[in-house]
Length: 101
Length: 487
Image (cartoon, each protein chain N blue to C red):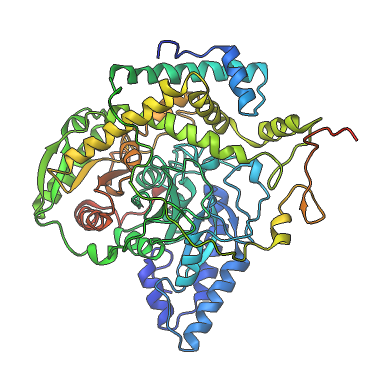
């Protein structure tokens, strides 16, 4: 990890990827904290693991299959009652695409 | 209702079966919660109505001569990241502050079927991210053994409620130590089952390859009994193990004769805290006296667990928490356009630690860094697993302390996230390997704070943890001691 230390620009870029906003102060604090954490994590560099397979599942198991049969799911009104906004039996969300008509 | 509030779950069920009103018992616990919660802040929601209705149902069932479930009339507290239909489930986050799930978690269904009485929802670090419960958006939980100390995290509310006699039983969730570490800090027993042993359906996801729900109680037997109720296959969780569950309660009476206990000597000798070291040494001698054999084992890669865990868990968290976008449930802070609505919602909804972990995880997964961080961490995770494989060729359980120190003071580590992460060093390795582990008290420090012993077993060997945990409890447990701060 030669470039493990994180810059303020990288912090702001990652915040954008994660859909988070940070004030200037928050971004500076985040940069210092992540820098310390990533600095500590450089300790992993003492290990050569190029030949070691990654562990994606700690307990090996096959993906289970089930019959493709329709079942009852949660009640629609109970589910939509949790939505910030709903309309005509669906979620009401901000405009996603501008459409010229 | 003799023994209130310290009687065991088994005694409560016995009382209810022999005619004592479950409603009266429930009322007594609700009253105790109302009295002490302003001091302890361990409950976020107290469900008077639901608890009394469940208790009344048990009373009717008994009066009608119906067969009673294994937890009939037994009150229980649930960590507030377990979905309860019709009861607010907040994850101690502003983003889910008003969220009312339309369904029950698998474990909640199992509890209802067993006759348990759900008293309410307990405080936690926001989205289960933390080791002190100080990351809750809704107040800091206090350790009932010393109010200025942390109860541990992230299941701090569940541990506190159990230790303080506000409920005999609780459920928490454990991703990197979140039932074991607060269990150790609050002087109770907590079991982190094998990954896949308990269904995660209805547990709000933090790091999906690590999360497990675990029982918490003041005795090993009660934790074992609760595990029997919640363990088992559930097809709604694709990682749920389709295999027989064990006889955990019966295993508590099997003793430790011939058990090979692995001692990680260099970890023990490296302990700075002499109380923790002598507590663990005392437990090891006691196990030996009861017929166990001590063998030296080593976990050479355990020291990398903090780095591995805080890359893997944050990467998974950054992906899991992408769902909180203000569209389908939870908080929405409207912005000028879609992206601004996302960012405004998430900026207002998530607290500092959750944002920090999303940032770290997003970075570890982002283009150009994936191989160097995330993939590398997953490779080192393999080495940590192999350490255990090697250790288990020579022993049946691996023994370490649960935590390097007893409960630290509130505010002690909040300014330095890395120091907080390093306190998880003993609970992280078994989590990364998916292994079952128990934390049970093995004495008190000079200051009167509980010390936790951790035992780790091979996959699906929870029974041996119950046998060994019971032996520790019998010899150096603190079941008779009461949290000092409540006097």
